[in-house]
Image (cartoon, rainbow, N blue to C red; front, side, top):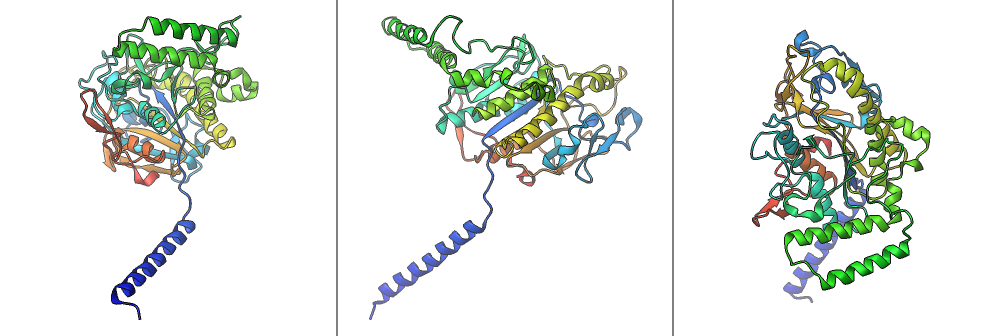
Length: 442
């Protein structure tokens, strides 16, 4: 006859076995959670009017509602601007967050808050990057990728065609390696993908230089470096990192092919639009296809969306048509290639624009309420999140911060933004994001 202790042990083992079997059955029955692999951020530097695109107020007075009318989308109850005929059919994929807000109204600090998820120390456009900055979510996704074993020749974070900036004199902080260091700087294309002779500087060997000669030069450089080593300083480390990155890009054929838009058919290139924004979106698709984890396509040379004057003509005739055409083509192309199941697409800007139209038929800066749009893997589309007040001036329900958007992106990628930290320059551990993921869209 078993002892009391043996009997208790057998019962507990049986209960544990039943519990584990039940958990296994539940896990098998549960649908697999879809997890994003890559992110494409479409960023409108200068900030378009949310009231004229995603959060229209047709019942508001004329000095608020503006000139454009809302149109129905493929999802009943969701309307967007008539300026976006290519977007309406994709509404079932979109989560339109209409109550994003922060408190800085200047371009570079506004862009910083949008891509970093917290305020810059001053509200100003006249600022530049430093190693003391907090890193953007693009930088952090690249950092996470390398932490998790990313070993591609292409950097995990790429910006095309040029960086976030107010002008080339004032570049938005946060988008580079920041406190994480030069190893996590993005690769910035800095050339026009729509140019007939589009080439990325430093990609592929120089004309007439064979791979064998490149290897010989690399060997010689290593010998020189061994005998003339720089003193171990942060600057010397950065020099070495950039040199190795340049050599890898120059010698890796697959990296060069990822940037070669001539591989695409004329029909595909036309579908995106033969302009800088369209071809940057196409390049973004090629880069995530090649394994890049985060691609930012900056829609604008400097702050072209800054419509203080003549907002309606600029949006109708110059700004929105190329953007929405490229955006629609990107979603189509990703879906057709099976990449939308692994790619999260974000539409974002520095802030929104004033509800009241100014005396120059323009709208001014307005960070108090604006829209961000999410689509793709990990996102439950066909919905709006939050409601702004009757003039689109402030969140009426479900206010959302940029940090919440970032936490949502990390969650879609499979990361708990409150469980992972990185170190600031002074050694302080910092969360990936202090925000809360937007549960409705996941």
